[in-house]
Length: 125
Image (tube, rainbow, N blue to C red; front, side, top):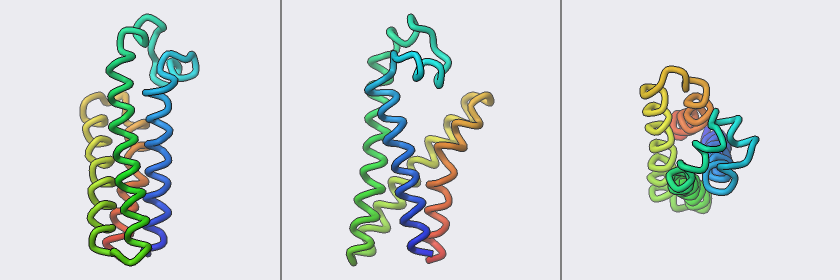
């Protein structure tokens, strides 16, 4: 189960790195605007907010990845704490997204299922 937790935490981190890329690097690109349903004008106005938000996603990914690395290398308590912190924050963010706008259930699931499964697997492991 611990290996499953590692894999799921890495998948969750990869998703959040991808979100970082969309929000902080490619926010005004047509493909990104399509994903988020924004117009060129709205994307330009919200670019500073998206840039900042993207880094939050990157930081959550880094926390989870460092947790996996530490846990796998023998620092199980510290590693588990970081996996729980990173993945738990991802889950919380997904819940906020889902409860703030019912049309965002799919993105919330994309953002929240892998970290939730990682936490469950680590608890069981």
